[in-house]
Image (cartoon, rainbow, N blue to C red; front, side):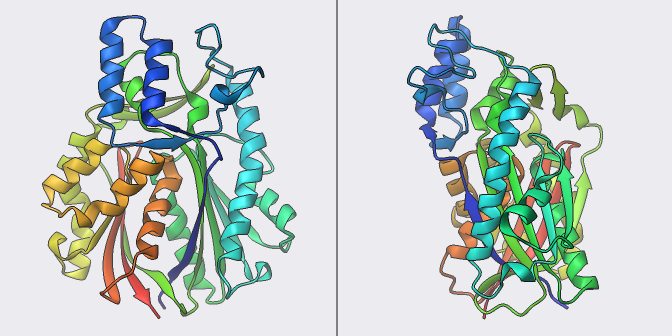
Length: 367
């Protein structure tokens, strides 16, 4: 029995800033040395990002208290507790908004059809977890199964999709709501270490939801064909996500693109072997745009055309890296595109701490 993503809905905080504006602000607040200003300028200018959304409203405070960027030119570092309090306040409403939007965009289902809820986030914590909030605010059945995937990072949407597919395989009438939400910008650090500056230059805030079931689709949908997971051994220190006294500390090494490039062939081989296909036969590569260098390496490694990675580059340019939610933005971009081939193949992949490489083969169908 096949399982499908029937629809995807996305949501972002209302405030967004041009990457050039953020670059200049970081130069002002962190660039007390000329060499640091040069590094910041280069990192931001070469990021492939045009704008990012954020819950931080410091530049629109109009006299209100600011979280990080103070009017006197100083940079505050609020405690982890303060940051998580803001996460809790914003995430509760954004989880519910995204869930409501996801259900509303699918005319075939009613909220009473939802049998399982899977929520995903690594940028904050609260209990009862987000699924509880969704059930209460949307008036879903209290008996709805709910699960939360936390602290897995940018690849966490893939375990959520595999879990949803398993539910649908064991319960043919299952309808699974998945919501991924990340507020990465709450964890800005006062650091001029290049790896920290790279993290600050790409991460953004956003959420995305999807409906997954084995019911036959009536329109554009994505069919799950196969999943694969792989670990690049002895690289766990190249991408880490730890809880510190002043927020969660992301270490994103500049070596990550090279590590991914050198491990991709072995990570993807199980998928290609299972379906007896070659990389050149994949029409669309839905790659998590963790950074422009990652996309560049993959494009070079597999000799991809500009069009094959277009959706990933578009999402990177317009939203930046929203951790686990980002791959759903890419898949949504592909679902919305008119497709000449009624059964276009899609290779989706994301990367995260470990260094873990998650991938999936999907087929875009048009019923």
